Length: 456
Image: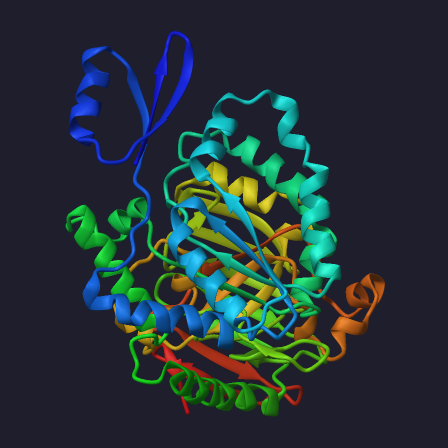
């Protein structure tokens, strides 16, 4: 566990184990020390669920990343997830990895930096980090990211500082990001519980119970609790492919989204758009799963072809800040107005990251009657929440959702209506009463969703 407090001499960061936490905190208060942040290292599941943990880790390596012999695996992990990261590393070497390289992150240190760092550092990005990610990408490494952030850790941080830091990060890692978004490298995003995140999701449970409940929810969402998770994923991929084939067969020109929350949105699709779902493939034909879990069928919108209003159906966790009950209004593809009941400055920072962040880069269909949605859990984590509801994404489009898009130049992609940006941020609009109608090039209207679910 870690505790951070402010003194006359500056910020002090204290990490300890085997110590009575309440006693330490009482000492801090008695000495008039301001406690800034308390953090408990993530825990493995109890014995009841440990049988699923090994299944999960093996599923990530063999099905998610689909690691190949002599391939390098790069893992980006929070320090709270060290035990799971070590397990992934062990399995990766057992599967013949050439090397496993870890890039550790610590949100608490990042928060301290945002709160107390000098202004100029937020417009800079370390050259060594750029070299790290770009060089490994050029070597054909596979990339695994573990997403497990505290949903409200950064709520005291100036959003402008975070926007500037994110912009510097995105500019520096442009090549790395584009390689992954065009599937030149295999990549996968997964998650494991941390204490702060678990207690946000299950506030009524005690600390240990909350972590255990979140483990159970994650295992269920990624099918690690099945007798044969690999077989379960094979069946799941086949089901997603049927939905993908339906959308690709009809070649819709426009989609119309409408529900009782106020979403009334027309989305035009590029002529050569492709719907994708489940498994993706590198240029060499290597299959991988980019997100575990995944329930979506997705494509890209035409950059200038979005008109109407999109109303969020779930909170968005953006850079450690929650944005709640927000509305975006589009005209000719561009956000022309926006509002939010909470997190307006964070929403503004997201939209104004660059010109491309004013436009959409993804439209994704997820039935309301899906495993994650039916769990009735708000995860405050986009990896899970986006797979419980239809969603859109502001920012960069995936080039692979356009026919031969991964082979086109930036200019050719722009001419085809593909949006480019430094960011890609999903937000949820799906509800139980969402209706989606597809309009073909001939003007025929075909129902796709009725009352939140596919019609087929």
